[in-house]
Picture 1 (cartoon, helix red, strand yellow):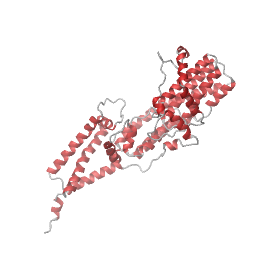
Picture 2 (cartoon, rainbow, N blue to C red):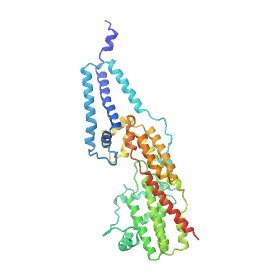
Picture 3 (tube, rainbow, N blue to C red):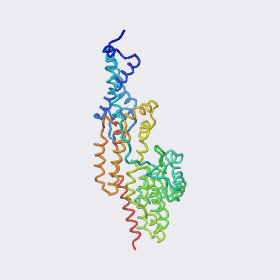
Length: 441
């Protein structure tokens, strides 16, 4: 017997497809509501950020841990999804006539969420920012003996003072603890030998991969502080050439760390080391006689470099890292931005949801525009405009949206560019001034 077409339209879908279709629609609706809520409610964004282990707002008062945040995010979604499924089933809204258009609507929204820019307008990576050169691998290998994850870096303990630590720029404070500083300097012989090794290279390579090990800041700081203190003591004693022999390698390593750097951490360490060395060298010149040969060696250590290119490089590193880090599965992207490893189930969910919560090329294009503007401002030393430009990016380009929700969590907290660049230019000004002083007749 023939069945009228109208009865076919109203007939329930077959069991398994019908149940699956209704389940997809029932789950999609509360998830879309969650994305819309995250775009407008800071508390929802903080809950999601806490769930993912991301530090969203520096001043956040959010106290729940990842487990509680997961319950807060997923329990309402599950409850609403179940309620929609049960209500639709009981009311007979599980026919193709109802479920079909709903599935098409869900597919359309998902296609909208997944739509990304076709290409990255500024395809810079860490490898193109700091290419490999002859000697890069060997110098980087020696440098990273004191990586944060390497045995020497993890086990390094800075010498401690019995009383208060000295003011490393004040000679009287240094003289007051002279025996301890000199004892520490002897104890740092292995680190000093390592310093000589890395300084033997004309350039110090940086082959740091995404999520790779970073140089241990403490060892660089300790050698620099004690080395500049020893140089000041040598000058205080009238030994200007000896002081220069101590401080020149500090300046050289500080400068060599910067132009090839792939990470802001390493570059800023180089700036701090260079600046401390320059200040110590200036003290030596003003305190003790220094031979023409020693002055010439200092001048050679201070020569060269492109100041504007260095300022641009400071900004470019952040963008180059993100290009390398973000063009990966979302689970890897989140793992790079958080501390610790997420559970496997979270990595699976993030990778599955990735295209619908993160559009990497669109995010990089927007962030790349910011970095291009910031590079120009950094090169021009226009510090006053850097903060407002970054704020405009946060308020307009990276503001929370229904689409590309994860971009806001990853990019809303930008580095304090103005402060970083200002410190760089202060070191540069001090270098130029000291070099001019050395060239005076």
